[in-house]
Amino acid sequence: MDSNPNTTHRARRGPAARRSFAAVLLLAASLLPHTHPAMAAGVTLTISGNIGKFTNPSAHSYVFSEAEFNALPMREITTATDWTPKGTFRGPLLRELLAKVGAHGRQIKFYGEDNYNVTIPASDFSKYDVILARTWNNQPLQLNDFGPFWVMYPIQNMSTSETSGIFIAKLAWQVSRIEVK
Ligand SMILES: Nc1nc2c(c(=O)[nH]1)N[C@H]1C(S)=C(S)[C@@H](COP(=O)(O)O)O[C@H]1N2
Ligand SMILES: [Mo]
Image (cartoon, rainbow, N blue to C red):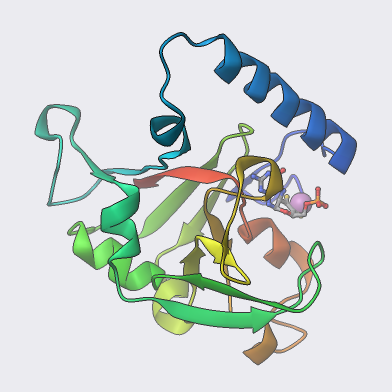
């Protein structure tokens, strides 16, 4: 799998390691002075790179607040994954999210908070109704539980050949940043 040029792997991390990663983040957060809990809970999504609309022109990026993100038209995908039982993910279509920021690139790079990243051809988002999921069964995805955002394909509508092999590497979780290339 490491030979796939579109996929950058780091060492696989099991659930226990994910928990300790979350524990470190919680500890770090608890050490930050004057952090209001409501602000700490606020989640943002940053899109940068080959885009045409900016909230932050000097940084050449578009930052969605949680409120702005939640106001986007939402789609649902009900599916099981390798990590979750059958349940319903909700989020905007990736192609609509990218259109909203005037994205022009052909390759979209998703960064996880755990340093994972994966690059997906934008054509996937025309071909499939891929969403950037924010909730699972109506609950916001938490950082220690695949959040804040999780790239989710309509797995239930896809064939076994489409979801085999390197496919699952595209299901990037803990996403908070996207770069359009
Ligand atoms: N944020 C994040 N998303 C991720 C990963 C990861 O390590 N971090 N691993 C990816 C890869 S390479 C695969 S194959 C699948 C499954 O990872 P797992 O076998 O470690 O559970 O999740 C994908 N999404
Ligand atoms: Mo993987």
